[in-house]
Length: 445
Image 1 (cartoon, helix red, strand yellow):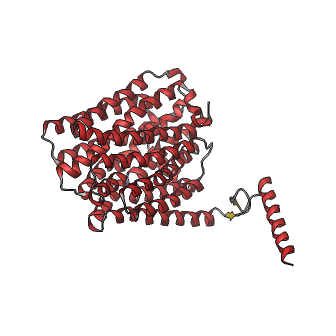
Image 2: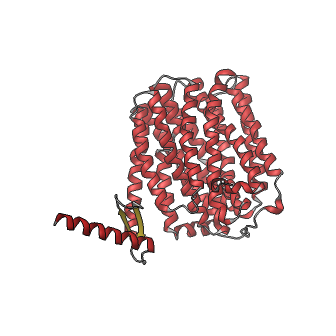
Image 3: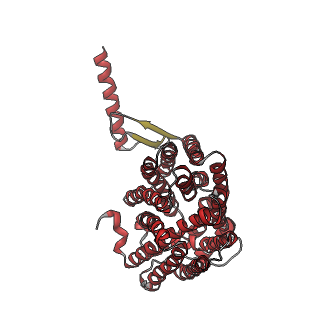
């Protein structure tokens, strides 16, 4: 089997991968339908209302993630996930029935978004760390990347199906379809071979365990750098639900089908990024910083695209950069964290990743209404470039790192600590550089 798909050798992971793919498609369908419902049915193209809906959906992460991470460290994660998937399905069905009955109002969507956020806050750390239960430690980075591939394959398929479904059968049925898709994950979880799950240490009940997780993160400067970069990029840059909806509707005058296509094209780059990440055995902090820089450049270009078609094409490199950033950040933290602390550490990561959305979405929505949708994307581009540059400068100074770039030799970019002995490959590269300089000097003479 190709190294890219190595984790699929394990039957439990295959079940999870297939079930999660179906459920993720439904989730992306609901996200598109929810934004379109708020934007075109319940308001008069209000970017602020869409931003508030998104904020309410992610606000519970700020308050519940630390506790949810402790649950993920203490409890049987498989059983916890079954409970959250059932709850998410019930909520999706409830909102769908309200829409189909014709009684839905904006405050109903706000309430359901908040309730979905509460369940998702509990689901997130368990979902992230359950990967380690299904594969050996040496396959963890690959499994994390394939999880991202599944999520983004769903992003590739889901928005397009949602746009067509909205046009053919209406918004309400999209929510009902999403409710049904959660059955696939529940089926996969109940059919797993529990005797083949990896033995993972669980935290025993005691006082101060959340503070223990915070102290662990504070003592890890590499995790802090990753979290800082992801927090800023997520707050100001990863608002595609909002920015794509406003760009499609107000800037290009398109309908739900074209809006759904934007999400699918964005996912082409995201899926490519996830599959490339699956081939990396051990991601590094420098990849996180480099991906944030690339994301800032790509979104800046996307904001300037003059037509719907050029904007659509610009979504591909944005998807590639954003998924490289998120996958490398997730895998870097999970593979370097003590297994007994993994749930709490990942819950704090979820706070900075998703918890920043309640702050960023209304702000970006206000920028879209006040300065225009292009500036809403531009704000994310500028913020990403600034935080990546600051993180790179800090890491070079704090970790005593030397960065060298050579045009004429491979590898072109080398990064190493100044206080360690160079590797044999670095010695050979340095010797080649010295010979090249000497030859240039001889020619000049």
